[in-house]
Length: 358
Image 1 (cartoon, rainbow, N blue to C red):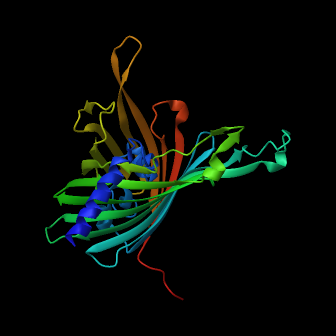
Image 2 (image 1 turned 135 degrees about the horizontal axis):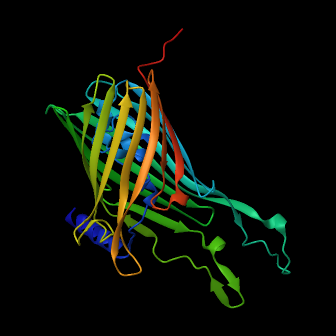
Image 3 (image 1 turned 90 degrees about the vertical axis):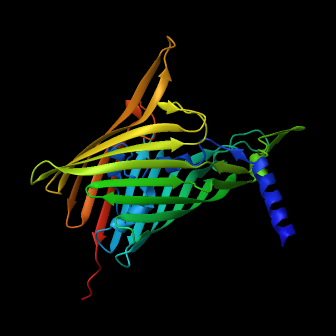
């Protein structure tokens, strides 16, 4: 048995030795879920509850107000060339636990494949033109439970990743997230460690489709590395709701995102971690209408005169909630501060206790 364990450890070390640690591996999972939280600067680690908490902090699933919740989100990027979609379902079987399943897809469809456009005689034959898609999928299986300590909940995700580049290449990956929330009087605290065990993407390549031979030369050879490793990152936050009057409330949340994949252009950067602060606010009227705003993606940019400037990404949004149905809108983007790259996000949620028969 000891020999088996040693062999397993040795094989694992070899695997990591030949793997590629990609700083932006599975970066589509950094976009977010729910227009409400995107408008609030990608916060939600502390205050998010219900279906969308499966992404921001799975421990927040225990805060579901109803037994069931379904929801989804849609956004277009780059003048409609790329689409980002989310669909999920959550269930609270009792007062102590909750579970959810979410599907996220980010892809570009109908890409022309011109490899076979020219026939053997050197003529262009547009009947040989085919289309393919490049898409990333994430399947999140979530579970959360209240602990005997008052106000404390824990939760986690098991993530299955599938990435597809037409018939040329595809990858499967698996990872785990761990999270906790804690309520102390009117204050909410949360922490979520994503990819706590690192997330591995194992790629396979179709060399018959990738390689092109011209004479004695071969081009488009598949890369040697077939493994990507996504390193952990942690989000921590604090939130509180203030009553400005009998009809008006203000939710404020502050988050800090800790990256452990080397120095980034964040306001706080070191060899140990790079830290990005985020801030979001939500002004609510009669728990019916909501106006939201937030800032995130704070970056230190070196300008032409070698001076360093701090740039931020502002976000805004609106929301309406009525009888368990919530529709939210956010004007934000995928990670750039350029106004021309902003996209419209729409999401919905429906919370209900059950479906009546008859």
